[in-house]
Length: 204
Image: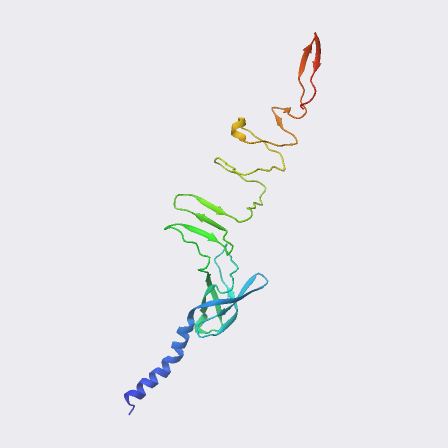
């Protein structure tokens, strides 16, 4: 006859392996190291209990990627509760996370650069040094306001009507400017002096 205590112990022994697997199925760990194998990003993560899991593939949504910094937090999934077969599903870092309003979305990095889609319909891009656009063409449907200096290294073509005030409130420096087929830097004007037809020199 099995006693009550013996029955409890037998049940505990049967449940123990399942309980261990459930505890290791999903864990929140701390990133210790990041490396690459080709295009695959691998993480070393320290999980609760002090164990260190190495070479965990960092799985991410299609079209988005990030290289986490040490001490970021990683959600580790162990298939079947087997710690030796694990992946990092998601990596977060509360040290750099932005505080945003309800319904807003933001992309950010550890350097403070961010793209913030605000509730008022504004998309605010912040970059510490510069913004680069590598494209054969860029189109802007609305108005463009530039508060800093503007440098053009190629031809500026204006198809609509403009006024000087609409172009700039400062100075324009250019090696050559043409308007209506007239070159500003080389054009000349005919004039009459003492009944003689003459032509002015170029602009000074």
